[in-house]
Amino acid sequence: MGNLFGKKKATRVTEQDRAVLLWILFPLFILQVQDIEFAQIEMKVFEGLKVGNDCLKKMHEVLSLEEVERIMDETHDSIEYQKQIDEMLAGSLTQEDEEAVLAELEAITQGEADLELPEVPEEELPEVPEQEPGLCFLLFYFCGNYYTCIAQHANANKTFL
Image 1 (tube, rainbow, N blue to C red):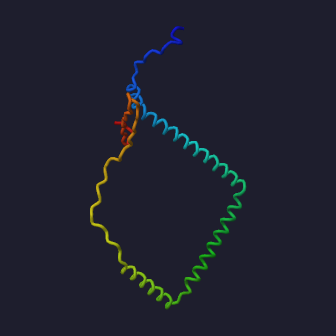
Image 2 (cartoon, one colour):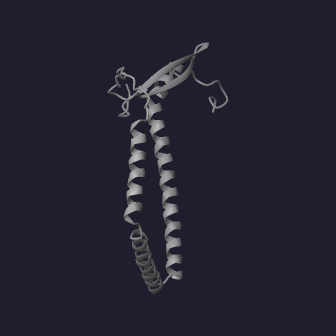
Image 3 (spheres, rainbow, N blue to C red):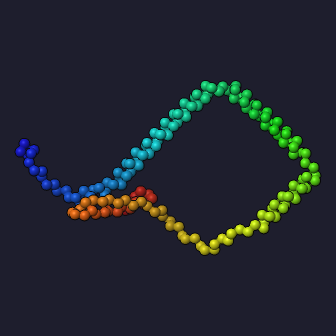
């Protein structure tokens, strides 16, 4: 019991040792945070699927199969009727009207040919790097009377250099 209220023993772990340990564990912390965020997104998607399933069940209760078939038949009949109207209207053009329409189309296409387009630069584009830039992690720790920064670079494969 003498040690309970006495001074703490000096630890052999230095601030630099703690900083190196944090530097090593930092990428693992980042991966854990990303895993948690992904799990939360999965839960939201799952909840959305449940709500969508409930909506579909309610819609199936309201709409019967016979009613859907009746609506589809009415739609098909309406489409056929519209096709008949379109055929009647399309056949009403005389030869003169058709020639006038073709002449107007020719005039429009000629006008597009005379259109001036902007000039395209002839310079070559800069080369794209083959490797995507990675992420840079910074870790600050207190060493003595100043803060020290350790930079950690991760490439696209999440391997740490």
